Every structure is written in structure tokens, then in C-alpha cells.
Image 1: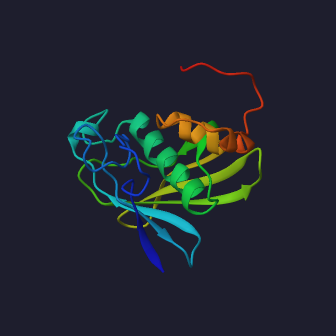
Image 2: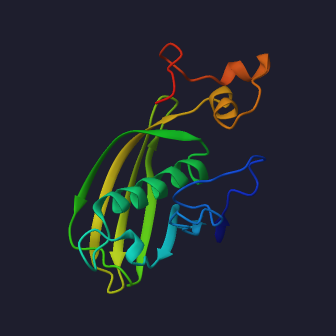
Length: 170
């Protein structure tokens, strides 16, 4: 079964660069959760607003694509909001502007302290363009509520997975 993943059910506004359809400066990727394959997918074709060298998608945008897919995998498959802790990426072949590509991501392991995920981008000929692996730090309920501008109640504190003292915003 393949179902769409959207921000509409969170109960707060989203301006996500990777997936929010109402963000005019963003990638606006439509993600899907393929429950049978246990992966998150997105088909995309980017225009020259996202180019680096002429006709090629900028490397930073490729990293954003891979990261966004793995973050959705953490939400849809591992059932956790999470922040990227560390990532490694390999660029196997160019991701071209104006050509169809497919993005897929999955969860390798999920534990209370860390989620490991992987992602790949394929071109229209099903050739591997880029691959990534990342470690994510799961957010506790209080952290997720706080991050979305909500008020944390005493009951929410039992879900805090923060091991460091109150880190400030970046």
C-alpha cells in the first residue's frame, strides 16, 4: 500500500524547504510511504532554479533531497520526529536539471537514542546517481511540541530524549 505523506495533519503550519507545497522557494516534493516495501519515495524533476553547474542540480540541493527523504522515513517508518546528527553522501553520477528522478529512503535501525537511515536517487534510466546514510537523533514529545511553537505540559516531559543540557537554537 502506498500513501501520501503530508504536513497537513500535524496541527501546526509548515514551511518545510523540502516538502511543503506552499513554500514557493522550496523543492515541494510529494513523498509517499510504500508500506509493503518499508520505504519512502518521491518522484521529482527540478528546474534550473536548483542548478549549480549548467544543467546539473546543485550538490547542496542533492544533500537536501536525500536528507528530507530520510527524515520522512524516520517519521513514517520509525514513527519518530528526528534531527539529522551525521550524514555521509556519495555522488555516483550527475543529477540533471529538467529530467525525471526517483528518490527512495528507508530505516536501517531504530532505537531510543538513534535512528539510522539510508537514501538513494536514481535517474530515469534507473541508474544510481547519489546515495546517503545518516544517523538521526529522535526528538522526544516535549522537544517536538516546543519546536512547533506549542506549550509543553508536565505530562509531555516524560518523552524528552534530550541527553544534553538545554541547547540553544543554531
